[in-house]
Length: 276
Image 1 (cartoon, rainbow, N blue to C red):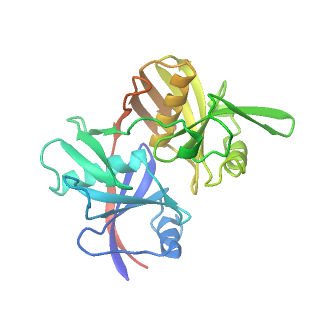
Image 2 (image 1 turned 60 degrees about the vertical axis):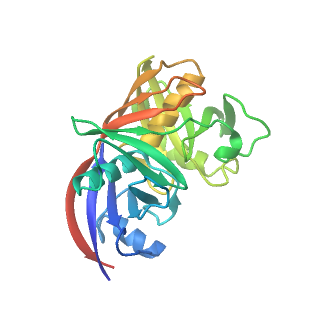
Image 3 (image 1 turned 120 degrees about the vertical axis):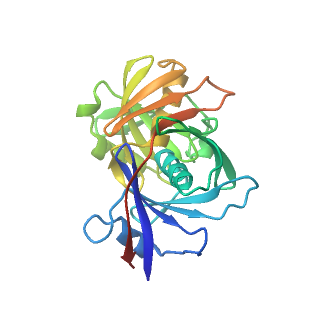
């Protein structure tokens, strides 16, 4: 089966986008892994598939798959790429659009400078939303690994995030502790692990170890989750620039009861076809 694809990226977090709006597409986990393989396929962190919407007014429905073929719940960098793709193909009237994911519509705005703003909804700190297997919600949770204690915050941004504050992200044990924490029984569906260095109330540095992908150059929902936890801890203001390996995102959140907005770039890299 030969299928067309579009390679896209947001701050170096790269995707293979599959357009199934006109022809249904159902790839197996093995085919998804082949697509994501950087030696034998196209290569990407995640695969994005867009389908016809089911919600009135939505431009498209999109689904996310990790590089290991497993489904993901949301992708902040990915949804911006979907919006950019739809706009480039005339599927958007004006600057505003709605993209459907998991039965919910997410509002996006295309900016003149090529960036895309996304309404990411309100952060959810309830343990059941991640899910997180604890008896009660708390601002911080603690686990021991060897002789060291690790403290983290937990939030759902449509997918689960654990956030650890570190003095320096460059020396943080991202791969070791990220893999260890996401495999803990506390997270029955695993978790994305963010390592956050607070520079001041309006700027942080962040590295994220993602489910099914490992560390990526940027994680949009991870940036949102880190700012939400940082706000919960009283460390950050309402507007925060997040420095990731691949570039910067701007996150705005007024606090509980308000919706969180993310702004960043989306870029088409190339198009092609692949035999699967």
